[in-house]
Amino acid sequence: MKKFQLPKLLPVLLSGIIFFTANAQKLPNVQQTSLRAPADLKIDGKANEWNNRFQAYNDTTHVYYTVANDDKNLYLTLQASDPAIINMILTGGVTFSINRAGEKELADAANITYPDLKDATYPTLKKENMMSINFSDIKVRQDSFAMANNSQLAARSKYISVNGINSLAELTSINNRDGIKAVSLFDNKMVYTYELAVDLSLLGLDMAKPERFAYNIAVGEGRYNPIVFFAGARPIHISYTPFHRPPSPDNPHGYIPADFWGEYTLAKQ
Image 1 (tube, rainbow, N blue to C red):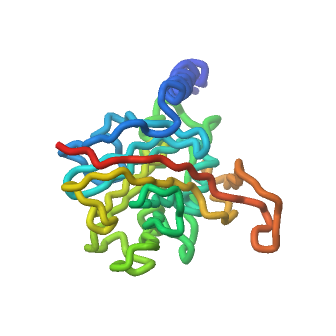
Image 2: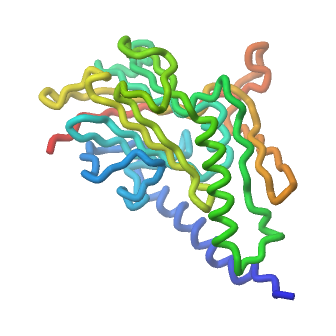
């Protein structure tokens, strides 16, 4: 029988936790500068082009994020590792809102939500049961869980919700040719990465006249639908609800989204 290897793994796990905590403490709460997107940027649910480094860590929504642009698109890359926040994203989406006038008002903004799962079955995600893993095989197990989770995400994250862009329908396919692309993935440590690209012309933005605009990033839309993780064959209902308001008939659990505002000006070459 192989010896239980958890004590040897603990320093690795703790160093990862310390790294994420220290990195969050070094970053601003809201992105401070404009940024050109890497020339090789792909919307694939991975932050490799950024070396998994972000411009800000927002402590209201508990996500890392970067807003960037090139001459054609505006980009949002976002990452979450907290199961509570991932739960909010998968049940309520991430809404990226652009107010071209620079006002912090959603009513006059272009609003894009992904993933839109209102009419879909929510994913049943897999998570390792750490007490039952043979740690000599941990990399294979982690990769297997990531593949299973990403297969579920791909099967259910088929739509992007759009509001405030007159040329687009309110619900559009992720395979659209209208100038919006979005993809999200889990890595093998259950860190969730979200990427969005929006054609500047859809937002009324122009590289020839780069003006300051306001943006809002919101996590969740007020629904309370706990994601189910499977640890081996045993289901675990993850029902974290970090943000609340007094319950009401329309919102009996008092579950609300979290959001914040920032400002950005298109970066020239």
